[in-house]
Amino acid sequence: MKVYKLGGASIRDVHSIKKIAYIIQKEGKTNCLLVISAMGKMTNAFEKIVSTYVNKQQKELSIAIQFVTDFHTKISNNLFQKDHEIHKKVSSLLDLMVGFLVKNKSNDYDFLYDQIVCFGELLSTTIVSSYLNEVGVTNTWKDVRKLIKTDAIFRDATVHWEETKNLINSQINTSELTIVQGFIGSDANGNTTTLGREGSDYTAGIFGYCLDAKDITIWKDVEGVLNADPKVFKETQLLKQISYEETIEMAFYGASVIHPKTIQPIQKKEIPLYVRSFNNLNSRGTKVGRGITIEPLVPCFIVKKNQVLVSISSLDFSFIVEKNISYIFKQLDQYQLKVNLIQNSAISFSVCIDNTFNHFDVFYRQIKSLFKVSFVKDVDLYTVRHFTSDSLKKIYNLGESLLSQTNKETTQIVIKKNK
Ligand code: ASP
Ligand code: MG
Image (cartoon, rainbow, N blue to C red):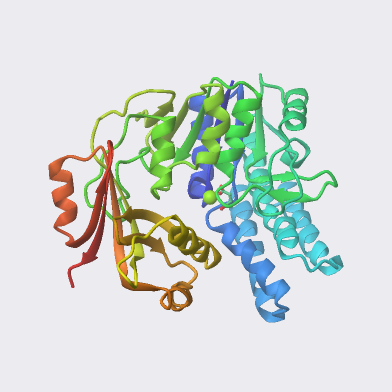
């Protein structure tokens, strides 16, 4: 049996939902479990409902609820006849959500988030399942919250594997086509939990693992895994195959390929993962598997923008040793400054950090009384896996190189862009 995952970009409108029917008909009408996330950018829209509700912004809350209502209603109006039962199903899901908000007494943001945001997946799967049944792709819709059990850490729940595996195996008929929601699960009390943003890929990994799937396919609106982000680099190449380890390395350096969490369960059982284009069934996309060498062997580029490069040395020319480094790291951790590169010499210590929460200035004030500190803001960190001298030249040409570091497979370069 196989597992398919379809994300927001592959179910953003009527046209793409119709395409799902085509893909399933061509590629896997039976023996298939389909994991579906919320449509388009709907998860962001549900997040807006949560934040406006918690902040008691009544007007904005009504607008946010109206927005998701209109979005789903319009899609189902376009896909189904007026008297189809789907319209009732969609409105009762939306009523359930609003009803929850009316009755709710909790102030726990993360709890509320999961109880509301899950409606994105509940609505999308309900619509897609009904549509597929309508056009002859017979399938069974399941509430994944009865299958994936987790702890009660809302927004970042951890899977209870044994229980989940038993539930999935006793309730999924692997000879049929089943549709489940990605991203969500439930705790021991039956409250909805979520697995972290972009969690639907992980859901596909969970089902693949529990059902011993033959393979998993993530359908995307790009050809597969590329050697660079097409939004940043003009020329990109499709990677035909890469290893689990390579995807984990690339994710570590900041590529948004496949979340390492997704790889964890499936690499244990060596289940191959395919990333394929929704728009081009003739292309085989990318295969991810155990120990396979990258093909084609080309440099892979990853960039992290808007970094701060900080150099720290002692005030009296003494060495920077364990004690100082440990203190510096404690401060970095406290101010949520994520370290992406470290370089150490006798008297100075450099780090390239993400300033996501804008805490750098407080950090700087904190350490500058104890150390000599210099920094350059707004630099870019380029990582080149499987580098060649030509590929590095390309990066050096982008601006002034402030620091570089090479190990076996990887070179990292901090660049201050030419103005
Ligand atoms: N809908 C969720 C999100 O946007 C989960 C997913 O798409 O994977 O994060
Ligand atoms: Mg998504």
